[in-house]
Length: 596
Image 1 (cartoon, rainbow, N blue to C red):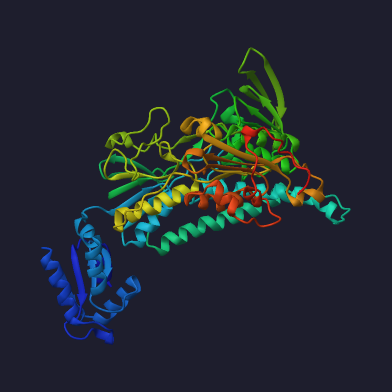
Image 2: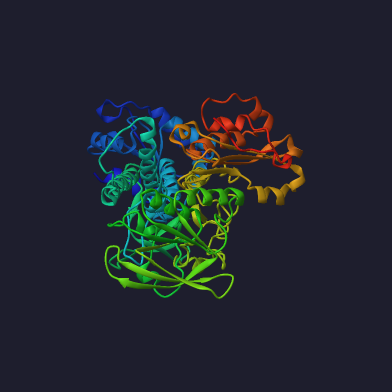
């Protein structure tokens, strides 16, 4: 059946499928509508080809095949530059919205309307939305194996080696704490409770596999071409796709989106690539890591250290300078203190200079030599596993961006863009973690990718709002925040113009369990000059992510301290503490808690 394929993939500028009288098979349609559509294109100065289904052999079969492709069973059925627009009404709606003009301006000489390089959250969001809007889209995605040989499928960091497995391992650790608490609530069990690393990782990897397969299925359903190859620009509008066998294919597109994300950084010291692992490897590690040294103080470092400790492992964190750089430092130190209460050991102001293998095995034994950042002191430690979490590097170096003139920051490797995610080259855009100066979070990339596709192909104008983006650090005691840190708020608004309300609080669930009553902490930062508007929200406590999500929506709506005071809390919950904040830091009053 050549006609349907030709309409969707040929070099037709404008085609109307219709019938001169009544279409074969008795399907609904109207010759008058065909004429009206033809008149519209004539007024736009566009020639069109008309296929009369009752004038060609097997016309009924052609229409049946087209209905399967387009889900439209009436005529006329309009195609512009390989994109199905719809019937008469849809065509006029597209004309009124400007979409029809955009379609007519597209150059059919390109293989695709859009090629997305990178199959992570942002790239997939953009690709699928563009396909929904009728564009011909390709996704190029290729995972370069880690030095330990770890690779994964479609979905990017979040699905495979980030948010999803991290949160599930965090949950596994919380269940261990719940077992301990349960005795105080009357649960009696005599058998020894052990954790099986293999059972946990097998279950998590099975779930990840289903998510990756779901992404592939979604691309297929939306007719997005997925190619498991590494994309590299070779000239303007043209990329070379290289698969794992080294086979190369060239593709062209009218527009491109860079969504290649980042990968973990290595120290550049003897033994790091040979013997250390990163978050790329941890979540599918086939053996329990044992006594672990976590190098770094990023949220990735503290989250991994936290759940490993929660699973009963001996964990040490080596910190070069401060915890959670870029976050509120008071909150960061409280996170560290809460982890120390769980048995995590911190080595402050030290950096590794060498990693040696003492014994092979799964996990084996490693010796780490470290040097003080404040003097000449050196220390040594023996561990089963060394996990590096010292930062991430953008995957932009081998994309051939310099061949087409895309600006890339020499310092960070990230891509500067304007407020519409457009790079220095007009037809190349970027979303996600490769962007210079934007939050590196999955929901941000998803939102930016979706809105970008709508602007490019749907006649929309909405831009991604990068202000007041909430986030959470999934340490054993979660830290959620939205808006400014106290340090940054002071820089922007001046400390004397701020009211900082805060309190410690004791979750009801912790009382019977006998857990500390002055560990959880809540803080808001308000701008005195703007009706005490809340410009910073911070909470350290159970389910901090769930709490922060709701208050983030309120901050988008202009939340003030008075509005919080006017809100009736849900009792007994952790979130209600924000409706009863009374003590400011400036007052110096005691915030310790005696009860719930």
